[in-house]
Image (cartoon, rainbow, N blue to C red):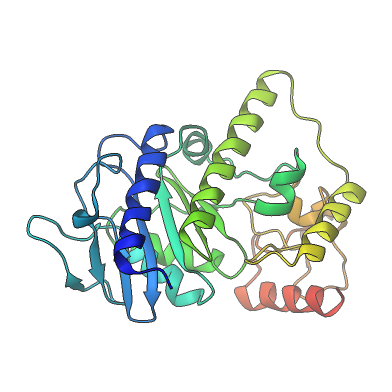
Length: 281
């Protein structure tokens, strides 16, 4: 088992990576790692993530209360959203928050990362929705984030940045790196006239690969929770073709089927859809 000092060193190393890759500026961003159900290590507030050393790292409990912190350091003010992830996702071992340039640009523009344009993104990342804006350091962010936690391992934070989580620190960071790479490719392909997307048949093949390898985390198949998601991984690129017999199916007044997660669909209905999908996999 890796001891706490080694984990603190790893947090500092990941901090250097996100800083050197221009995923944060100045003192932005924060990182946390779960030690057990009651103890978590996290980066301090007001410190550049590119210049941390192990003594900077704080320890908090599941409520975000300080267990241990060296003089002059206190936990990140954003620890609340980390704790919400751990509370709702017991499979998660680490959370990373950053402001990656391209991913944050999409978050500011209000555009979720939903277009299926490369195998790695479809298999490992899936759709990346946008959690509604919340004032930093308040409960608004975790409250707005919560509804996405059962279905995704990465979200954009509206007008703020990005948040990723996974089984361990390296995996959580890799999701952030994948998110930014995907966002950059999507942006640049739009500049070249628009990306060529996978069709539904190819997306299904990619999902089968994911299932074959038993990859951890949440990765919805046919449920779209994105804003106006008319073309995304979750729906195989065709939300309009969603099965009308599925629980939670909605029919709007224009006569077009709409994705679960759009207007008029409750979280319970979305959960019923997911259960239906899993039962038939």
